[in-house]
Image 1 (spheres, rainbow, N blue to C red):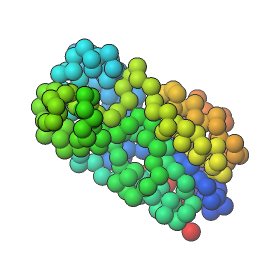
Image 2 (cartoon, one colour):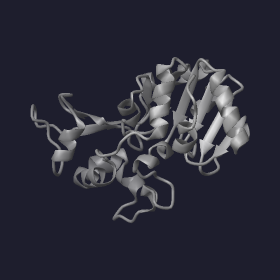
Image 3 (spheres, rainbow, N blue to C red):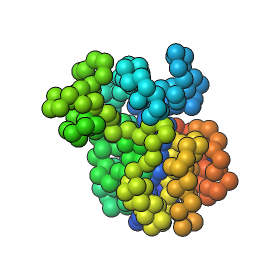
Length: 242
């Protein structure tokens, strides 16, 4: 493992256009549960499976139940950036990292100081009235009860989060693809690489330095030139920026 960490350091030292692509595992060290681990959302017991509740058809059919689950299990206002978030921000500030591409919706990369962040699945920090497009912040959603209503027109306020059965934002996808295609080092971390179309972004990487950091195996392990198994905060947090 020490040899692998030394190689990761060497790759980072020799790179000037790094892109990081991450998933739920990046935020578990901040106290936010992932979806597919033994204690993740998919393994919790509800009246309906979580993947059903966070679908667009369920949102349209039973918004009250959707918001009960959403506020209870998907909002973590007290969560703080961990060592992985902070190191990525530091790499960007040093001019080595060009972009973070994330499947997470928690906003922790921005909270850590990262500026170029492509949020494939949206953000809990952005909420809009479905009727008049009035903007509302995270605090508005947390304070409310039941179905959130717009104070301007009375419409339903929906989080800017991509639900199952909804497509990803095209501009965000295009920007993420461009960043990945131009990277001289792609670091993938904290993701099972099982959710498409996000996982398919890897095929746009043209370089020969692909580092994969995850606690468990992924379908792309064989494609990685460097495979590190372990907590991403611990591994990235140990990287020197120079």
